[in-house]
Length: 351
Ligand code: UD1
Ligand code: UDP
Image (cartoon, rainbow, N blue to C red; front, side, top):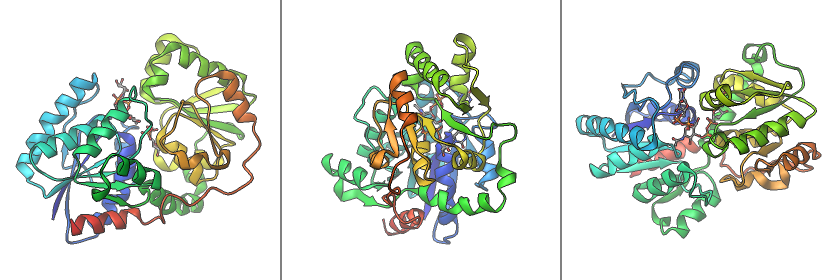
């Protein structure tokens, strides 16, 4: 069986690392890796390939940044050419980025079956580009790999139950796989020069970065938190902050880091403040309370016992959420058994 895996953005490299490792250990599958080039900075792309031993992409379209239409259009054209040449039995796409949309659309138009990892997530907020990408990709895919029961239920509501498989979350597999490595060599993955006690923050969602009032409110909240904040800064946010805003003095900006240093930063943080989908879950897996800087989450399981608090961008709500006591119960094991990639492999082989 020949598969073309299509990735392009940071979270997809992390997810694909886990699935590719399992797929490539099976002699029944040959995987071709296609990188759209949506993310291209060394610390947004190459670092993950090196650190997580992901095989180098067979193709890199190098589409780079652009408007949604330009970026997606360039990807569609490039992906189609490669699929026509490679003639795979199916394509594998991840998550909800423009690379996911372009990969699934180019594939289905060539009658090549699509398998979607992390299917069924819904924010029910159609203003998010990711929500549109998810809805379209799920609708045109042939196999839907759902990470949570909520995702399974969402797909059933949309009439997609027959092609849905509950697999668990490959990001949970990933945490289990790499935590040991970090624990064995904590010094190697520690970020130098950061304060001892800190909150970890990330901001990159369009709805936060592209609205100066919202971004200003989040920064105002940060300035009112009586704690240092470590902020590995996404290039999108860096560009906006550079041109328009000043950061509060308790915020320590660092460049984006690799996955293992990021997990070490998360483990050692007092709490996490983020608008990232992946980081909300990682905080939950690593038992760090999370404050979500959005008005909703797709990962509703993490809201259990206020391990994750939806705070939006209101400064007072954010400050109050950070001040809340620690949850009294443990996070629940609702993201599979750490063997999601194996289940995905099995389903692909039996398709
Ligand atoms: C994309 C995804 C988002 C995902 C995020 C993960 C879409 C619509 N959005 O958002 O769902 O959560 O990736 O990080 O697909 N840039 C660089 N260097 C890079 C990459 C980006 O400088 O290597 C800058 C460019 O100015 C670019 C901006 O960041 O215009 C946004 O990049 P883009 O890939 O369009 O979207 P993300 O915000 O990264
Ligand atoms: N991440 C990372 N380095 C960073 C910031 C994030 O490795 O400097 C990881 C993070 O831990 C998670 C993934 O990138 O595994 C999430 O990516 P991002 O927040 O960009 O996208 P999202 O998950 O929101 O789509």
